[in-house]
Length: 265
Image 1 (cartoon, helix red, strand yellow):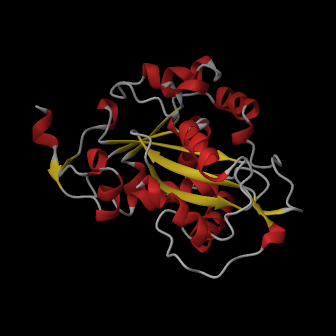
Image 2: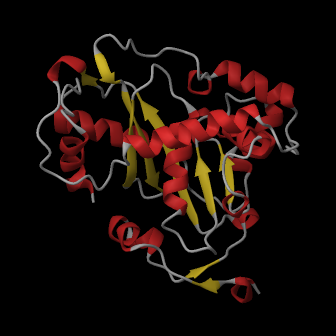
């Protein structure tokens, strides 16, 4: 029965090279309520940062994993503009009071919370997007004191630009409920993307959310997610520590960053 609803398409060669298991298929269109076609996870880390005093090295590597700062900033400006002109009515199945409580409980949802002093660091962290097999897809340098929504939205938007129009995606995120509400309230992402996008909370954080939130966003009560847990980013950060040391003083530039990630392709 489900086979009849599938359509042919293909992902970009970049995604296929990153993870053939996730992106090598040519049949897409599995419904969001049935688990969708693709599961990804996004998360930020403020331990991997770049000291302002080290400066930038000469470019010697064209970034393939890090999306450009200009692209992230453009998304940030778009979000700021969209939030000033709300044009959608929230139709969330979760009461706003519950989402407000979730937002207050998690630092990642607090866009104003300063996680890192900007005096010594120009890049304060890294935001990652990985597939369900824990393979890094794309990353973005965080250059603000807190984990603003522009980083996750930029990564998600970039992913969709490389997918066929029929591909549906579930994004696992610590505060997926909060980001989902923002996207529902404001015209941040095109409707063509929104209709193919669903959020769930990661396994480690899911049970810290309000019960009303868990009924909708807890991945263990969401149909079709199987054994996806969204915790692969924690393993990714651990691998980075082994690769470059506990302090990320390097990154000397995004070019240098991308060279380091070549081994993870």
